[in-house]
Image (cartoon, rainbow, N blue to C red; front, side):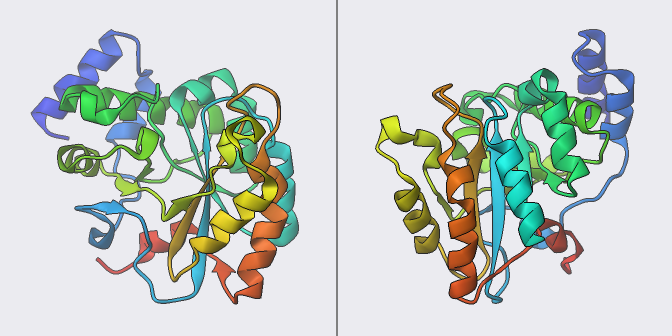
Length: 248
């Protein structure tokens, strides 16, 4: 860790935003993404195979999570969850459940701000604070994968995230299930959007939790049909962790 980064971490420690254990873990050399995933936002995985990655953001509540984990277990399929730090602090049991089920944990920032409105030090604070919260909640090693809030990326922000040791994993398409019935979405529409995104290395973005607070999680309801549709089109579900071993 260079002098500037050590100073930034020291400031976070002094402010009580990162516990000592989290700071040590953040400073340690954990798994790093290969060069093929750096220097750009990743909206499709670098492969020609007929595989699709399932990803779920978590920033509201845990509605639908049990349904999603049950379906993934039934299908023996892996997913990657991207919780925010605030979610991890408020709902540690939910984050532990994601990790305990064998799924990877990415980083979706601490408080879900627009990163293009932040400077480098503020971006680092968001990423490091979320990392500490996810580690504390899950007891697991998070993946070096970051998903930008609102998928709002800039060249500078991607470079900052890469500099912290994270690949910027975005998505090929969002099912828009998070909009819920009030936003004009239905399970049928969610499935259609997922099928529309199909292609080698496609990354599907879905959500657990209810943005409206009504407990309705269309992505959870649609997941069995989405997986069925992938299989019908001769696609397999791929674990994002597989790409950590990709040749640089």
